[in-house]
Image (cartoon, rainbow, N blue to C red; front, side, top):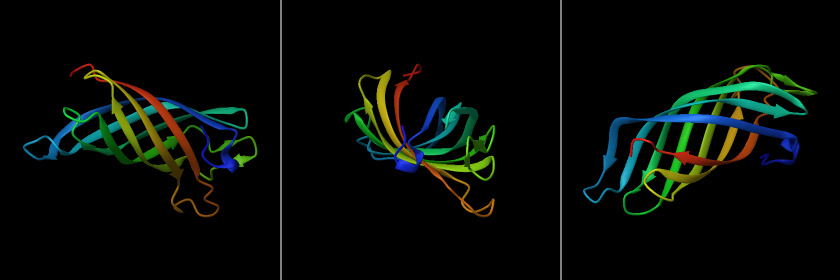
Length: 146
């Protein structure tokens, strides 16, 4: 769901997977940060046109999901678009960066609800303009190995 009025005709649908890395900083009580690598694949719809979007990068979860159901979720990824033009909107390149901040609410050990505020842009690497895209993302998380 678009976060800015300039992006109001933009929607993103994606599936994502995360792999928990062995590096984490946790207290004896379980509070701290875990590191993960995240992979996404999906579709970006803007001005009636659809295109592929995929990303790969690190993410960090801060909290204690064993004792408190809410975690802070932060990350940054490299993204690829299947096209850079959607109708009259031009992202000025298919190489992008995606950063996000959000919350994960654990309903049970296997399921959670999530919210992310996500920003996508090419950070000026593709020259000007750098229109960017801000979205609100809502998700259902499943943890099969827990």
